[in-house]
Each structure stands twice: as C-alpha cells, then as structure tokens.
Image (cartoon, rainbow, N blue to C red; front, top):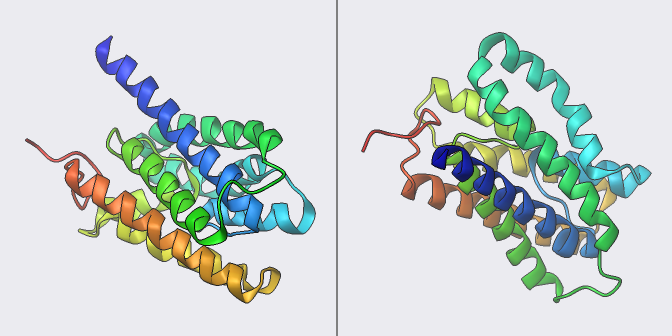
Length: 202
C-alpha cells in the first residue's frame, strides 16, 4: 500500500515538474529540450502539433524494442510516458502570454525542473519513455550513468533543431539541456541508481 502510494506520488510530481518546466519556461522562449521532448517541441514549433501526442507517437518504435528485449522497462515507463504526455498537453492551455522570467533564468529553471522530474522518477525505475527509455536500456547493458546517456541524446535533439531556432535560442537550449542532465545525474547518483539503471543494494 505504502509502496504503491509512493509510486503514484513520485509519478505525479515528476510528470508535473516536466510539464510545467516545458510550458512555463521552454515554449515562451521557443527553446528546445533534448531527447523525445525535444522532438515534440520541434514538431510543435514547425507544425503546431501537440507536444505530448508527438512524444507518444515517436516513442512507439522504442516501445516495440522494449517489449521484445526489455519487458520490465516497457511496463515501468508506459505509465510515465502516458501521464507526462497528457499533462504536457493539458498545461499547454496555460502557457502565459508574458514569460514569467527572462530568457536565461527560464532556460536554467526549466531545465532543472525537467531534470528533477525525470530524476526522481528514475529512482523508482519510472521513465517518461522515448530516449529516456532508450537510455535505461543502454544503461542496463553498460556501466554508464543513465543521466550521462540522457545528456548525449538531449544534445543530439538540440542539434537537430538548429534550423528552426535562432542562435540565442540554441545557446539557451543547450544551457537548459545541461541543467536537465546535471539534475538527473545528481539525483540518480545520490539516490543509489547504479550504472545498470536500477536501485543499488543498501
């Protein structure tokens, strides 16, 4: 009972931080995030597609791979990707007309919020799917920290978005991605998540 309640609370708080970080701090300044969220933001900026729904669609091939080779990760992240994507699209209706903060603080705070949200969910082996799930699968076969892997995927998504954003937006996006990776790495390391993407024995 207590374990189940903890799971629900962590899932809700993690997804809430991610959705608010994107809608309150990223979209206002046309910033990119890394990984699958970055892909969703690129689709949103170009075609006005819903970020959350794009995340779900693009995640499908990764989930097929997880179903075949990493079934536990499939189950642990399925709820994460659905809840986070729905919350992202829900809070999109509340994007402020005027940005809450200047560009640099928005990039830093937004990035940290995403990293904290993802990090606390990783402590219970919950993933928001997409490239986070892919990072977990790679970490399961290596000794790399899952946060470090996410930084690599995230920077790749930012690079892919270069043609649609300005020079200043790319710099701010890179800062946000670094903040996300930093927060995720610190939380997973402090929480005892080992190189295989699971909780180490205490």
